[in-house]
Amino acid sequence: MNIDGRPWRTIWLDSGGRSGLDAIAVIDQTLLPHRFSTRTLVSCDEAAEAIRTMVVRGAPLIGVTGAYGLMLALQADPSDGALAAAFEQLNATRPTAINLRWALERVRGRVQPLPPEQRAAAAQAEAAEIAEEDVAMCEAIGEHGLGLLQVLAAARPAERQGEPLNVLTHCNAGWIATVDWGTALAPIYKAHRAGLAIHVWVDETRPRNQGASLTAWELGREGVPHTVIVDNAGGHLMQHGLVDAVIVGSDRTTRSGDVCNKIGTYLKALAARDNGVPFYVALPGSTIDWTIDDGVAEIPIEARSAEEVTHIQGRGADGAIASVQLSPDGSAGFNPAFDVTPARLVTALITERGVAPASEAGLRGLYGATA
Image (cartoon, rainbow, N blue to C red):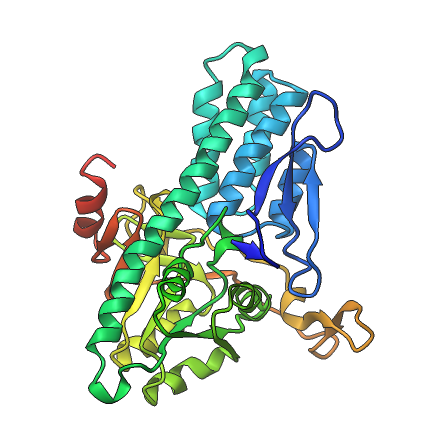
């Protein structure tokens, strides 16, 4: 996507100033929206730390970063032991998003049969392939989602024809959560470029405020009209007919169609169901966990620092980025990073292969019985 007229991706190969060796460069998302900066990662340790601290985040992007992290590890030591250690180190960084393990397993499967001297190059090739696939999948998600938005716009009553279509989204599932295009925002970008009048309600998405900081930043760069709202405003907007659809992303989707996404997604799905608002989930096939049926019971939910709840980061009047304390000293904080929306609350899943009901039958219809 574009930043100040220049096309960018979220991750790319970079020498890192090291002759004969590859590194990776990423956009540092912890500094957005107030500062745009890139960071070069030259080791597996640095890749793992970037994932853990959310310099990079979003299920598809951390998968690609993990894949390149294995490349960095194998450049330093291509032995079986180093491969196993790097796999476990990277896989342990974020336990909820399935894309990370999926990408790591792909790279490991490609390099393990090879002699050590060929492993780093093979890991680079596989990671690059995963990255290109992600771009293609996200753009396809955008095309399929665009069709849904066009149908919704055409079905509105005559007095609303020509008005912007109002879409609510939660957290950030845009291009900076992937390599490019995004998942939940890809249909919105496609609609905007196709000339469909569209407006996005952006949940702030506490506690890290990834909607207010990241989604709003993305949409602004692309010229998409949007309004940032507090997390608890969505239901009110739906009650008053101000939301035509909800589109969110997913960090892990079970074979039965349960969706694990940023904490607070479940509440939006409940409000959407109560108000007859379609609730769509956009995801690539790499986000589907075919081994899990019951998302509430089986998906591990990452517990993050209580400080993310008790403190908040922002830019002060002097331009400096700082963290300030919200809660009284001694107050405990509880910070599950994700929740699970049962399939019964999901109108449809938007994937790179098409749109399907949130069910095992629906997903098998797209991906086959042996997926």
